[in-house]
Image (cartoon, rainbow, N blue to C red; front, side, top):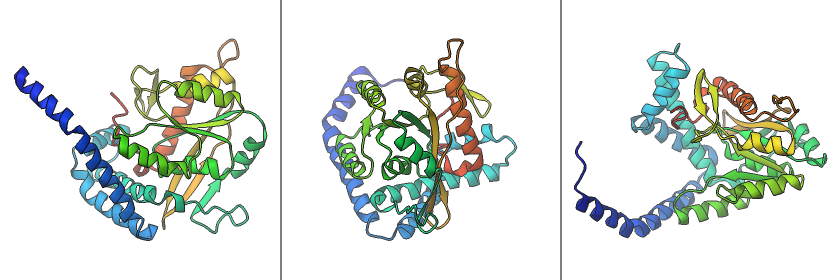
Amino acid sequence: MARLPLPVRKIIHRLKLALAPAVEVLVAGYVRGSIWWLRLWPLWLSAGGMAFWARTLGPFFAVSKVARRNLAAAFPEKSKGEINALVRGVWANMGRLSAEFAQQDRLWDYDPARPDAGRIEVKGAEIMARLKDDGRPALFFTAHTGNWELCAIAGAKLEVPGGVLYRAPNNKRAAAMIEDMRSGTMPGLIRAGRDAGRVMARMLADGQHLGMLVDQYWTGGPQVMFFGRPCATNPTLARLARQFDCPVHGMRVIRLPGARFRVEITEEVALPRDSEGKIEVVGAMQAVTSVIEGWVREYPDQWLWLHRRWR
């Protein structure tokens, strides 16, 4: 397709700049209105309704082609019908996640005295209790599976001091609103950016704990194997583990029937070391990625296949 003439491209660019503030206000207003609406209903109803619409409409979006390609490559033994069913499941998970995000301050009801009585169950609570009191820093990795937002809430509710690295939306108004919502349930938020590395290093030096998502494509990152294919990954977790020689644990949230969740914390993941005894960055990220692959294989419809993990 021929490119538009330069004068036309300049006009379009100027229009985008001129309309950007109005678009930002509209998007932020839509987000605020959606959150207000989703908070009006019981969680099972709002989450179920959002799952229905997402499962029904989502497969028709162009981004679903990415999910189908990813799933077909990861599970070549599955039929086209099975792949399409998984895509619908991915969208249903996203729909539920949006409703749960609106009610995130109401989700946590885990009671150690009655661990099976509430919406949340925790596998590995004793690990968190041990880490809380050992006086050492530790790192947690997670993935975009189930309701991953609950990982940050779990750390705070289980009283493990630390922070969570996150990426803010590009819309500044929506970002401020979302950050304000998260701050009530997720203390220690660290916005990804130029200063994030220094903040994380300072926290680890103080003996705190950090969590981060590590399952997305990272431009220029080291190559690891994921479902038999190479992909670039973010090495920050491994670099921090190498610098502070601290343990690394996995944490995931599994979506259960009846608007319930299981938070699982793994024991320390064994990471390969070099001849000097220091954690080897690429090998460490491969070990972490292999754990995540196991999670995804167990519950494939709960992972974010819509992302272009392989490029």
